[in-house]
Length: 308
Image 1: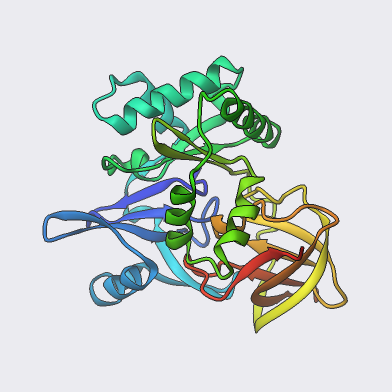
Image 2 (image 1 turned 180 degrees about the vertical axis):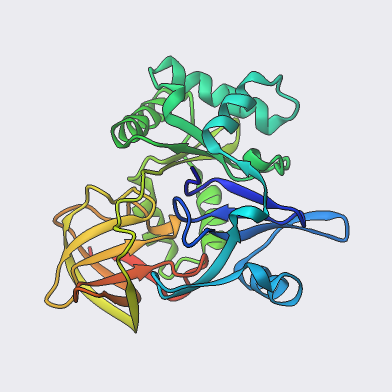
C-alpha cells in the first residue's frame, strides 16, 4: 500500500514523495523531491522539479482529472524501490547510529518510548527515510493514529517543560519562517506555530511530528477549479486539522470546508476561531465548495490565518 509521506525511486534514480494514498489509474500520485545532478544529490523545489521532468522525463508529469491538478505520478511498473515510513523507522532504530542525525533519532525515540508511545504507530519520512540526511537535517516523524498523535503532542509539551527537549529559539523560528515563505508577518507565524506542539529541538536539531491517516475521500469524487479566492469564516470543526491533508469545516455562505496540503498551515486553527483563508476555490460534482491551500508545495499567496 502506497501512503502519503512514503517515497518512491524510479529506474532513472529519481526519488518522489508520495502525496496521496493508493494509486489513480495505475499511477501513484507524488512529487519529485531528490535529483542526482552532476553526481550530487539535491533536494529540489517545485520549479526545478517541473522543469527537469519537462525536459528529461515528461512521462512522470501528470494531470489528475479527479483533482483537476497538475502534479507528478509514477506508474506502478516504473517503481524500482518503495521507501515505507513505518519500516524505515524500525530499520533505522535497529542500526548503530552512524551519524549525528541518526543518533538524535535514537535519542528522540527513546524519550517518546519512555513516555509510552508505541513504535507500531510511527514512521520516519524526509531525508532520513531515503538516506539523504546531512549534518543539519531535521527529523520528520509520521504518526498513523490520531489519538496517538495528539498524545505525542502532549508528551512533546511535557518534554519541553522538563528541558528534555527544547522549544525552538527565535533564530530557529526565523529559519523555518524563511524556508516556508509564509504569507504573513513573522510574529503571526510564530504565534500560530507555538501552540501546535508538533515540533521541538533535540540536541540542537529540529524534529517534526505529522499525522497521516487512510484517505477518507471517495475515490470517485471529482473537483473543478474555480479560481483564487480569499474569505473570512468561522471554523466549526477542527477534528481533522492535523491530518494530511488537513481539513477544517467552516461556517460560510458559499464554502463548506478548507483543505490544506502544506505543512505550514496544518493544525493552524481551532473550532470557534475566525480565520482568513486564501487559496483555490473548487467545486465537486455535487455542488460542494472547498478552498484548497497548498496546491503547490510553496503555496505562494495561499494561507490560513486566525483573525485575532
